[in-house]
Amino acid sequence: MSQAPVRTPLKPLDVALAELLAHALPLAGNERVSTFEADGRVLAEDLVSALDVPAHDNSSMDGYAVRAAECGDPQAWLPVSQRIPAGFNGEALATGTVARIFTGAPIPAGADAVVMQEDCTARAAEAGDASPAVQVQKMPQSGQWIRRRGEDVARGDVVLRHGERLSPASLGLAASIGFGELSVAPRVRVALFSTGDELVMPGEVAPADMKPGAIYNSNRFFLRAMLQRLGCVVTDLGIVPDRLDATTAALKGASQQHDLILTSGGVSVGEEDHIKPAVQSLGELSLWQLAIKPGKPFAYGRVGAAHFIGLPGNPVSSFVTFLLLVRPFLLALQGGTELAPSPITLPAHFVWPKADKRREFLRVRRNAAGGLDLFANQSSGVLTSAVWGDGLVDNPAGRTIAHGDPVQFIPFPAFLA
Image (cartoon, rainbow, N blue to C red; front, side):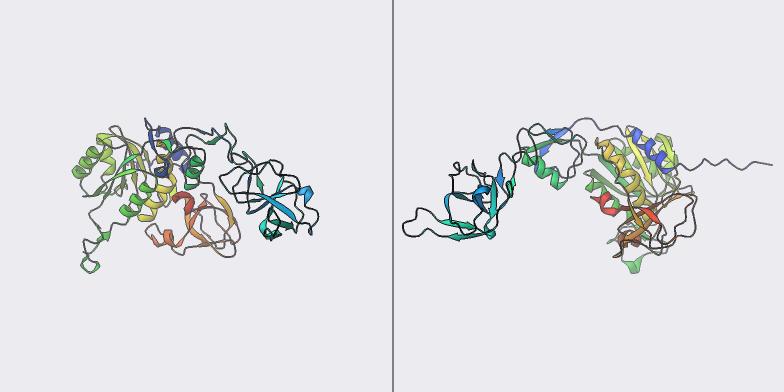
């Protein structure tokens, strides 16, 4: 009696990710780009400040620079001895006077506080008076409304570190210490294609004219968008027919000028799934099928000098595996150091009564009560769940969820920023 074939155990996600990242050596070479153009890029050098920010003590309010000890009498009129707008240095503050000052202007020597103009009564210069005057209605505290030199950045500080992915805020920080250009990791060159004779491009065939079994290629759109958000240079190779020769030719051609080949579909075990034999004929396949749901059919290997990642054809499976595996892989190729967002513990406002052998990623969204609601249909083909939801619950294998249980929530914006 013949024995049944031995099935290779499905690989746990954490093990698969570690193996995947072990292959993701940072790409060679860096490039200098305008700070204006560096959003989303990965920094290739530490940024060290050559100056203090702010460069001097300055006012954080429009008002009056004062000596706090001289402002104890709200009926006293204090002469305004000078006017200091932003970008100009004032003179030392004369005893018994105040200085009209504006936000960002340097604090004059001798002043130790700023009083908001709303807390003062101003009087214009009268006949015979050399200057206008004010009454300070609220006794100030020494140091109030003063931004101290270097309180944001001190000279010599490392303000942004090698491997950080640049955000709009970090671009502003780089500019604040004088960097008009930045050294960043090279963009990852990605060849993208889908497999499947059932796939049709939106706009090419009207819904009424779709043949039985045909579906629109949605994966191509969200995968390309996510690659571009990660700063990749994408070559879209379209839809490859479900033939071994066509799949092999597409992989071979894509391997010659790309760092990564990313495919969608064809990585299962059906007779029309040609990715596995095609990759093995050209290179090697070192990772195959994961113990996660959705997303079991996932593959990693090499085709020539290029990395290869094969994603499932079902849209939610493709979407989730991109977030969990492809995104950190691409960031690692760029030398990134923050590869995965941290989950948030929130209460489940739903019941998940049936445990699965695989680690599950459930589409949920936060509600007004501070908990998480579950999308009713968790099928891997229901892309609506990824639009309705605002994140994933990371549910360990073998675990049921009762209403109120704490669960690990990963918001989509943390992945897609």
